[in-house]
Length: 224
View 1 (cartoon, one colour):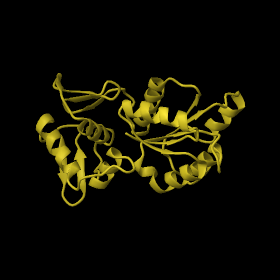
View 2 (view 1 turned 90 degrees about the horizontal axis):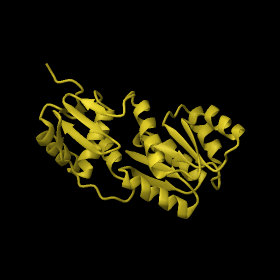
View 3 (view 1 turned 60 degrees about the vertical axis):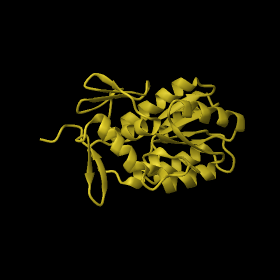
């Protein structure tokens, strides 16, 4: 899952980015409110969620959040802030935050909250993702097929998770690339195709279908 992190404190931001990456998130990091607003307005569709500090330089995080919601940008936003007064929490939630977390936060709790936000936004209320005979655990980063463990590379797991969250929707190669890679990472032209080939070999050829000229779709139920 690709996340935008907006945090101006260099030490804290570096720790958050490292901790979320260890849990399998792809993290892009900006350090001021205008950069966060610019990125989210242009690229919201390429992120699964955003982690937004409020005390950002150039533009306050609450103003960023309010502007996004006014423009009908529905990306899940987790506010992570030192502002712990009840009126601040109420205002943040009323302006459209999906969660409001007070610093300091345990990194594993932050990861769990982000996974929950992404699941709910994708209409997946359960912790475990299921499609046909495949079961994916986002927290443990494990995959079972027919009850048997399947070994996947990091990229294969991330691609499968993105497709299971979007099960039934056709996703283009470009959309999938945006979910797998953060800024500055080189992407081979056929990387997605190679990962899908490996997933089909490990999980069955019928799980992911090619929609010629458009992209790929993961079928929640086996085709009749």
